[in-house]
Image 1 (cartoon, rainbow, N blue to C red):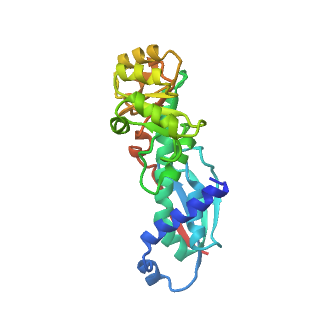
Image 2: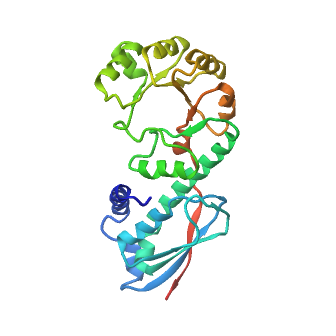
Image 3: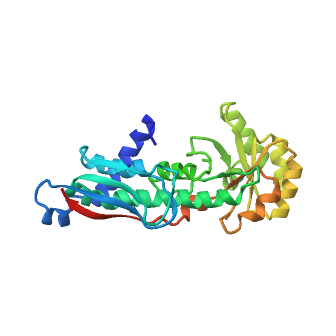
Length: 283
């Protein structure tokens, strides 16, 4: 996470999280440490998995005190194991203690998503299918969660509502039909925008193909229906399947012939990866 735009967005969000946790002061830390005292603490991995969010972890402490130094021994995307010494954090002990929870929350959440995503990607090995995330992200965490999906080997679907056209059931109901919704989208949107439409049955598939959809999302269909839908589409549009797809059931759709699988579970159901700050000592 090192481009300028990302840093601008990231800093603001991290500061919001820090303000949430330190509304006026860290009363516990201030009661036992009355002045600046240099110290160091180790970042230790407590579970096997994929690490993600080390730059966010570091930035959390830097925003509290730019003199904080984080020495990292791993990089995002690395496989880590229980007991691994991931990093050392050195600085004012008041900063180390006050920033600890927020920094760990980011790192645990992001690493959990990367780990879960990597496990799902492994299930798709040998197929041409690409794994996508969704907009089912934690509020104010999307930039971090979608980054973590990429670290785990997945790909990002549209980032937000301004990023692409996806006509879902309620859009279609509002327009009156699949055909009308696609026609209206083509009229309104720049020609460089692809139009994706969500369909729930084979009649809607036929209507979407005939209306010229670029991508057709097969929503909550059985594997048998998906196979039939792919035959009907016959390469005239990209195909994506979605709807309650998780690590436990994803293998059922591998042989359907779809191009993409999108799964909200990558971000809304991934457990954290347990990491901890330990062995603090005064310098």
